[in-house]
Amino acid sequence: MSASRSPADHEAAQAVVRHHAQLAADLDRHVGNLLTAADQGDAAGALRHRDELLRWLRDELLPHAHAEEDSLYAAAGERAEGELLVRGMLDEHQAITGLVAELETGNRPVRLAGTARALAALLAVHLAKENDLVVPLLVDAADVSLAKLLEGMHDLLGSSEGSKGGGGGCGCGGDRAPANAAAPTLTIDPRLDVRQLPHDQRHARVLAALEALPAGGALVLVAPHAPRPLLAEVAARYGDGMTSEWLQDGPDVWQIRLSRRPLTV
Image (tube, rainbow, N blue to C red; front, side, top):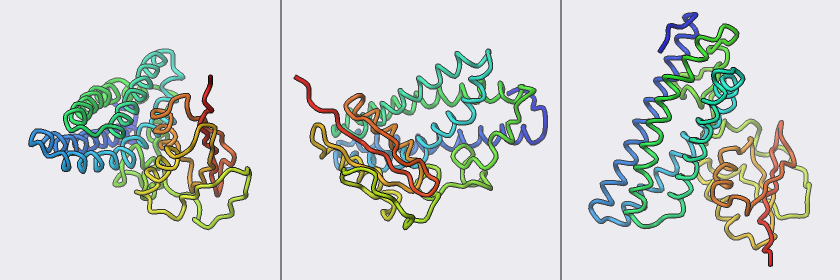
């Protein structure tokens, strides 16, 4: 990594690298548990470790990826020397999200192990590029302060590093409003209000509700923050088969209409 222009920028860069190392270590631990169960022929254990891995991915890795897109990638992509690099990094984010979707839908231990191992390998290469290319690019930019760019960014620096904007418990950026904030009825579609649910149950509840939607059906998700990691999961799982429409974008309540496309003949 190149020398920082200021002590604050240098510390911010090191904080990103440290958090990347923690993410890689946590992923390797989850993947190792799944691989061990698969090697032992323990199908129930493999599914259990798959579910633990998915919770970690939803709560930690996917929010981290989206926070990067909104801060590091946005700043680097504005520079001529960073445009193509960022485009490639975004493609890798899509590949990571696709592997997460494969884990969600798979149930055979061998296939799960292969997908998890591919995810770990891809993330290792991806994080190395961020450490060695993206972060130094921003550190060397005279018109960018990495320290200010990352100020309060819990999802990029981890809970021990982010001191001003730490997330809540779900890892999607933190609940930004009380769970009983007024949520006006905006459509005639049924509503799924997840604000009172425990953080670790929200994604699964929404995905189950979407799976039950008939062709042409819709529901309105009511959330306490912008659920971008969840929407990325939905996009990876359903592609063009599911559309999303933002009905209310904060500041107290977020409402998104999710609809399954009708069958065509």
